[in-house]
Image (tube, rainbow, N blue to C red; front, top):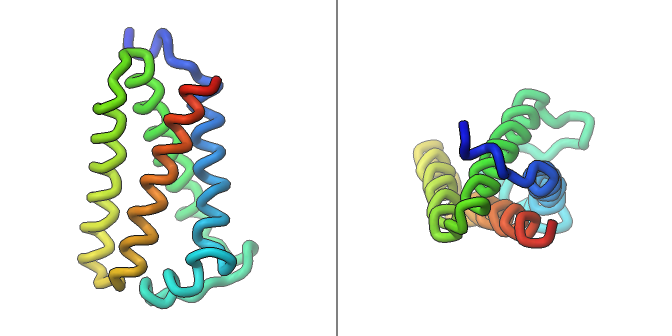
Length: 127
């Protein structure tokens, strides 16, 4: 648990929240949402229709990833952070491929993980 002693928790929270909010825009009809939904075989609903469990697990996953990024920041291990983000994106790709998402939907999902990671690294660097 010594790894957690010097973590910048403000940057962890800001990074996770920024990534969560970026996800709303990323998957919105304004950006990639419509074609992503088609390629994922789901219907886009209103904000009131978002599945609570999906939002909760997304928030938890982002907080965990931001914590890992925070730990790597205290150790000056940027490569480890990047590899962690790429591993998360690869898991998302493999899960999406098993459910036969379109190539476009897979790219949107993996791109979001990369964006989330970049936001988290930026939060660590700026705060």
